[in-house]
Length: 313
Image (tube, rainbow, N blue to C red):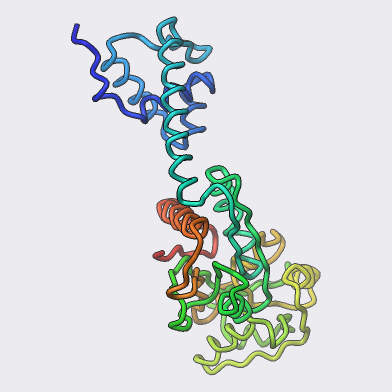
């Protein structure tokens, strides 16, 4: 039998072996690694072929390490620890062990977009602090970047040339009607006029953006109720006091009793991430942006959430 060649081994094989040892089965290891079970099985099969030894006994109770498998798994752990230490040394040199990332965003972004990005970022850089300042208007976000109070902002695109900007996602506007409503398709502006409208104040950033979009279609909204909080608006619609137009992301989670209708013309807001152009940003900010892009590039391959069309970042 040929001698094992270390140059043919892959880190993905070692990670799969350690994951199975920790999780107890191929399926649980695949879930932990966010891979398919077949990918994990292939990694172990090729590792066993390369080494020429049986590492795991497969059975109904899961996967159990053989005696040589236990020894090789411990060696694999040391290799992965050394790799982690190597990366930590590099990160220390780049200033990624400490620091702060200051983010300015409106509520729906802070609620639905940032948590998963922050979770993954903090796993990699636990010493970096994340500060989120929620704003009621996208212009306040841009002002914070301009005044040096934030490093990263989330706003509507397109925006001013003073910012570098990447499209993150497209979020369509929907009509939310009370539980008793029986909307017909297609929904018309005349149908909309039959309901008392519940909208945010005219100084709200999303309201201003929506008004501009509607103006292109010759439409002007006259609300019967003006309410600042999205949750309060949804509660009022749920109790039959009227209807609202809201971006789908801002409406999540939509109460199941509400009726959802598409607008007569499709309208959407384009949400993007911005940094001040030519700004000298600290290393943790660049690392955060890389993680943000990685998370949303991965989401493009998945089924978008209701109301979302993931855009190019």
